[in-house]
Length: 511
Image (cartoon, rainbow, N blue to C red; front, top):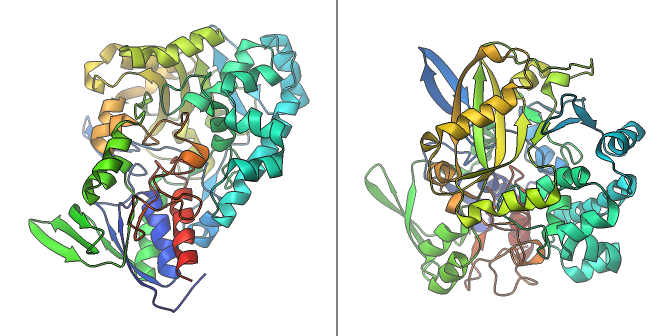
């Protein structure tokens, strides 16, 4: 998609993955794009941080660690496929419930997995049927991504039928899980995706939809994987690609005022003020910052009233030697496989833990998602001198920074190290809570998806347009202002999908 026509100028505010993807498509579509980033480097939460420990320089990802929700066509069309190497472990996901000594390898509809679930979890339901229906719903979502067309319930019912639409989209997660499964362990494991970004109850309408949403990535066919050299290579590559396309990229640029009516934008950079007069403005930021900048009080009030709380934290564990997990069964990429440690044995306990931060708790142990970045870099042929394990975990409150919770850092570290054969090689750990994430990445209330994936904030309602059927990604009342941050459909997670879909809408309307 390369156009030599001049469709006018666009200013994009925010150079995270969505801003970078939107800039790529809009520049190639004939617009002259200026991309403004508040920080001194692009990438948003898809970036790197460097610290020194005992004289050694350590580079680690403070935000996102893995790639999964990006669509294959975005990866190819932007030029990323030519610039970065990616891969996913061949070993299935590994699950430990509290007290388990043997790993449980979860390979979707594999007969061995089904038999193992029956024997170890007491699961006598229809796990294979669950995955078959999941694939149908995911295919429906992916077709909408490709067309750049946000969903409607009407279309879902036409394509999926009323039963699947009710179960997988508008229904509750509890109803969905109870329909297919019998054991609490199977239900808890599959419910992990539903509560990742915030304290969403399994009994909320539309909570079921989060599960197929999180499985709808195309680059690894619904799975998650790694980027050779680190996740930040994605944003670095898109920076180079966009610059070569002619996108004007300005970092350390803090936008101070936006007037949609006058089509003016002002920003500060190195103590100087600059002005732009773009034909259109796209916000690839959090929605609250965007609404405040355009001075839309009604929209700002609406966003402030939304459920914004994030309850996921991250522990970065740095080892001096390659991490080797216990109980190696000889499977290829065993040490690089994605791992989960689940600390609740009952669905009631899982729900109680999820809601604890909303009720004032600093920490209620829920589950750990373990991304084995060090072994994955070995798998991709790019081993580092030091080896990183990133642990995303629930459920944390918003009241305290990581440095104020040394007992949480120790507990999570011990839970992970209990499964590691060479735990003595652990050098140090870095804990980030939702409060840290809010400060570092400007995420309201530390939510990685900017707002909770909850009733009224997901599927067709995940937008800020007065007329979503006609102009889904319009932001507020001005037809020249758009929004494509992680707070819009579908969500964040280093996908770039909102950026792509917003760009498609703009290009269609200016064809």
